[in-house]
Image (cartoon, rainbow over all chains, first blue to last red; front, side, top):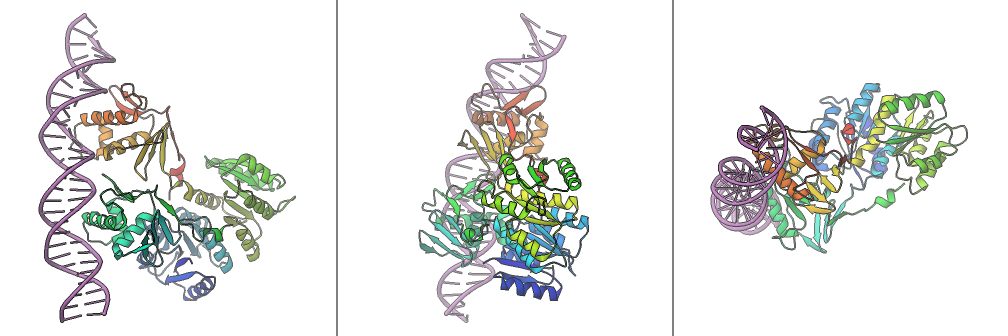
Length: 240
Length: 240
DNA sequence: CCATTTCGTAATCTAAATGTAACCGATACC
DNA sequence: GGTATCGGTTACATTTAGATTACGAAATGG
């Protein structure tokens, strides 16, 4: 089931939304301040973010901007919930990378319908990532290779998850450090090499000839797309 | 450029939308009745459909239903434009498979922003540069020639990417060094020659008679525009 | 509190990539 | 037609990037 992060300072509206969305089967994680919103998203990895614009301590627009900058969050749909109804407010919100802009007061059921639209076309938010004999289950944090369970450490898992979530795309060490270790990291970029090595020793049939994780000299690493195909788990159920 | 089908019976609004959307670079094809709307879409194969709900001769909701049933049209985003603002109207519209539901009166620029959102997700996956049989994928850092993968070094790739991204434009060695090697380079300009050579040996059918990379004596080099066409042309305009 | 696992760094090694000099051939210009 | 210049090409020394190993610190968990 889909996980939603809700950032909303109005306690009444927060409770109302939480109640209604959970009743509809969503998992709600929320904060009533904008302060640690981005960190919250990095921890929770939600499937969607509901964002108030006017927060007591920070600006929802800035949060959205921050989300779009972080490579591991950039693909997550963002819906603004706000009282700001002017034309420029709407356009600024939408052009900042938000996927919808809903003006308060709104109908809860319309919000839910609009949330579901975000999930409709999206095959990429599924819980399982597969590539040949390799299966990664995001919700249970387990990895299997040809049915056999593998034991990966937390960092190894996050690194593999990130690479597998965008097969074919090459990431620099810098990007991987940001995505897996966090922006406030104090880690050398050579560390990435070591983790790539450890991953390969666990998942590759022949670590000397890696087929799954590709080194792209001068650029970084990527998960091999030819081998990978994403599991389309509940996709069919949501289809129009 | 993206093609939009507009079904709207109000002649004034129709003209207003047509004018504004065409000014924004969209190709507009429209009808003021709902009668042949589905046939129109099958002929035109638009990238998006704008649909009024209350039409003199038929119901926009039925048209949307019809679009979602036809397999060759089902994937096309539909946006409702309507005066019906009630909660049930909105929910019915959205749950029927529409991608957005905009209540009249609305801001034209907001409509345009919402149209662009529909196009946003699509092209972002493949940032490809093409020129005849030569394909360069920026996100996976791969180059193929007639389907066959080529192995380029990092510098070769960046040089080719830069040249292909601005076909026809002649760059001096100085400019290429700035763009590919960086401003803080400590490299002779003859180095460019060597890399052009290495590139030609890999991508040209006959390196002695280069067709793709043109030497412009006294000025520099350029990628031949007659051969090149950018794949995802208007992508940049929609960028987040 | 101790054993075990996980984590990050430094050092080393190797193959590939890089940049330069030198030489050759073509072209433009007088 | 001669010559100066520019671009093409080759060969080679140097540099760099990535793989790998080993090790101590930190976290974890019983």
